[in-house]
Image (cartoon, rainbow, N blue to C red; front, side, top):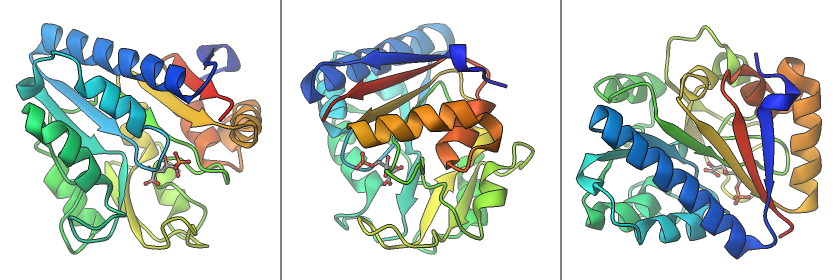
Length: 233
Ligand code: 6PG
């Protein structure tokens, strides 16, 4: 169980400083994993915040052919759709030689997603999470799938999620890594901007494992120190 002192805020002056700091953390995690185990297996969040960090990371000379990347979650849309997280991640990292693995196939089925993921080198070495203004993280949202998504004993690593209500920025069904898969990672970081999200994350940390915010449940389940990278906008 993660107590408050295991959450380390990394306050950045602006979005550029945030991107630089997050890219450095990802680079270090990838280099350490490849040096230790020959492979780096990372899960990257979608949304808008992290893309400058991914761009900055892509400029590093790394053993990209040893890197396996999955989204922390994805929207159930065809590859190439503007809402597709794996499409955006593939465009940045596949040309470098990294292997980018979709969470699921076109059916979007959670069980298919979980089956497809079994062959990957679990546990994850690094997870970068985003946070929505409603406190969701990955695609763990309030709704009928919430209990299964945050069940620490759920053996599934991914599941289908129908947020209720559907988030306006991407009003589609999702597939998401589970709390259990995220919490088993060797390192987890969060990237968020703005005062509203800071308040949400602070409340979520305070509420811990009973938090009404999905991100609170997830952070409370992570046994390792979590760095929260934040910038004012
Ligand atoms: C997604 C993300 C999601 C995202 C948050 C924050 O697919 O939308 O994985 O969890 O990280 O919604 O998104 P912003 O960074 O755009 O605020």
